[in-house]
Length: 481
Ligand code: HEM
Figure 1 (cartoon, protein in one colour):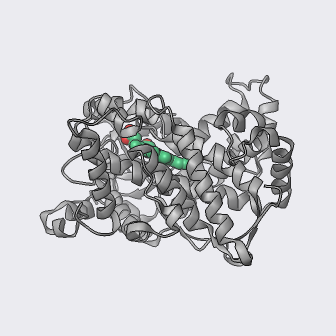
Figure 2 (tube, protein in one colour):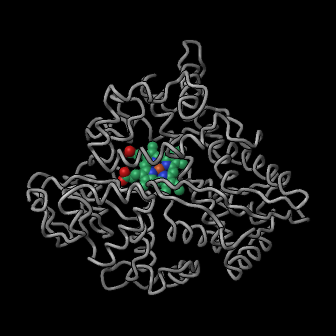
Figure 3 (cartoon, helix red, strand yellow):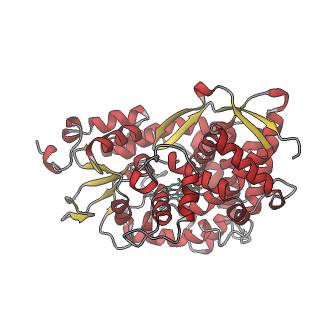
C-alpha cells in the first residue's frame, strides 16, 4: 500500500506500482528498453516502472534534470559504476561538488584539447582495422563484424588513454577474454544499477572475493591490471609529460588512485558504446540499398579528401560528406548506442517540470529508444531509418517554427540526448564522434558489404549497454583501393 502511494499519479503495470519485481524481471530479459518503450506508447510521456521510479521520453524533462542549476541529483543507478568500491569515479560520484571537481580535471583530456595526436592515433587504428578486414575477407571468408568493431574501439580507447593500444586488431582475438567476460558481467551490472537491493549485495564484503582484481589474468581484472601499470608508468617520478589522456589528467591534478579508476571508466564507457554505434550505422546503411548507393556515390565524388593511408579528417568528413553524416546521425537516432535508465532523483519537495508534478524522492529514468522516435520532432516516419530527414531539415534552416526554433535545431538537441546532457553529459562524445566521422566513410570506401544471412543479421541484447554478437558480413575489397 505504501509503495503504491509513492507516486500514484503515474500509470504503469500494477506489479510495478507495488514492487520492484516488474523492473527486475525485464532488466533480466535484456529487453528493458523495449518494454519501457511499450509502456510509454501506452501511457504517454511518463510511466511507472517501480514504486519509486518512473520512465520518461520527454526531452524537456530530460534536459531540465541535467541542467546546471537543476535540483535533481543522480539516482541510485549510478551506485553500480564504482569499479573499485567504495572509491567513486566520475560515473558513480553522486556528490555534486566532488563530481564537478572530477569533471573539471578530466574535461581537457576528453575534449581532445590536450591530445595533439588524437586524430593520428585513431587513423593508425583504422589502418589496422582495414588490414584485418582485408586479410580476414580473403578467399570469400565471412567476417564477424561485431568483433572487429569492438577490437577497433578497444584499441582506440586504450591507445588514446595509455599511449599504446592493447593490440586487439593486430592479434585478431579477444585479448584477456575481456569482451566475453565483460559481456557476461554487463547483465549483473545492470541488475545492480536498476535495483538498490542487488547493488547492496554486490557491494557487500561477501562479494569481495568475486570482484575483478588487477592480478587477474583475464577479464576486467586483467584490463584493470594493464590500466594500473600504465598509470604507474605515467606517475613515476622520472616520467615525462605524455600527450595522452592520462597525461592530461595528471596535468590537471588527478591523483594516482583516481587515475586508475578513471582509466577503467574510459575503457568501459568508450568501447561497447562506440562499437554498437559503428555496427548499427553500418548495418542500417548496407541493408538500405538506396541509402548505400548514395553514400558510395558521395564518397566517390570526394575521393580527393581521403589520404593514401585510408584516412579522412573529421573536419573533411563533416564538410564534404553531408549524406554520410546524415546516415551517422540517423543510425544513432534509430538505435541509440546506450539505453540505460540513467535515473535522476527529484528534489525533496518535488518539482513541476513541463507541466508535470514529480513528487520528491522519485527517480526519473530515461528511455532513449522512444525519445529518439518522437514523431512531433522527427516526423511521422520516425520509426524508419531515413537519413534524408536531416538534409531536409537542414534545407529549412531559415524557417523557425512557432517557438522560434528550427526543425533541425529541435532534432539535433533531441539527438544529443543519446549522450546525456548538461552537467552529466558524456565526456567522451567528442572522441566518439571523431571515430565515427572517420571510420564509417573509410569502411564504405574500401569494401563492398553484404549481410551474410539477412534473417539473422545480428544477435543483440540490451543491458543498458548492448551485448552484440554474430554480425556476419561479406566484405569484398573495392579493387581501386
Ligand atoms: C556513441 C558513443 C557513446 C554514447 C552514446 C555515450 C553515451 C553516454 C551517456 C548516455 C552517458 C551518461 C549520461 C547521464 O548520466 O545522464 C555517458 C557518460 C559518460 N561517457 Fe559516454 N557515450 C559514448 C562514448 C563514450 C566514449 C568514447 C567515452 C570515453 C572515451 C565515454 C566516456 C563517458 C564518461 C567518462 C561518462 C561519464 C560523464 C560524467 O559522469 O560526468 N563515452 N555517455
